[in-house]
Image (cartoon, rainbow, N blue to C red; front, side, top):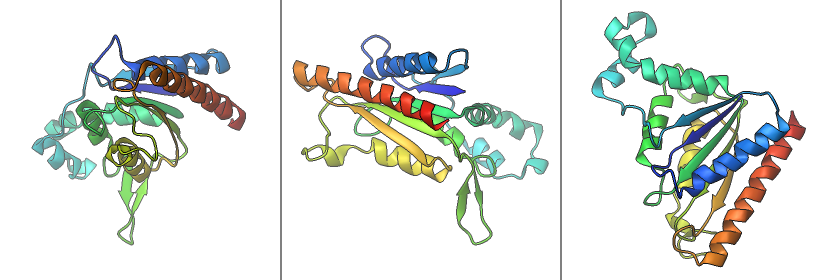
Length: 210
């Protein structure tokens, strides 16, 4: 199953949403009849973790009260959903050099001890979301390409690589549409078209790897 996660607060004019749509359309062409699940954390963000959430999370499952179980219910549903998917695609607009706060809240609901990672006897950590393939589509207002003066301001890819790598996702690919707000029209069009082309190629590679 392919799980598509959108995180833009915008509907019309959202380049990340358009590129996720292009990716899902290419997926359907190569996987007719296979399920696609959608989650929109931009429009419907999950709850932020609370003090009660933290307490429940670090209480062993057999000792949790009904209230604790209820506090973790939304997080458990999100985790069950991502475990059910074999392939993940994230539509991520860059907000102030990093991911939208709504996406951060979603991820904070995923990073759960005993669910998406565990502590090893030597004190290290093991991610439990292994075996999944993931693509992150990043729509950037300015131009953050390698070699530009803005390159070091891009914290989306380092963050996503770190947090999902911690949870065990190794196969991650990033596709960027640069200059969507501040690039000139020609640059913007070329960057957007290039991103769409790269996404189609990823779908084709995934098909060959199955």
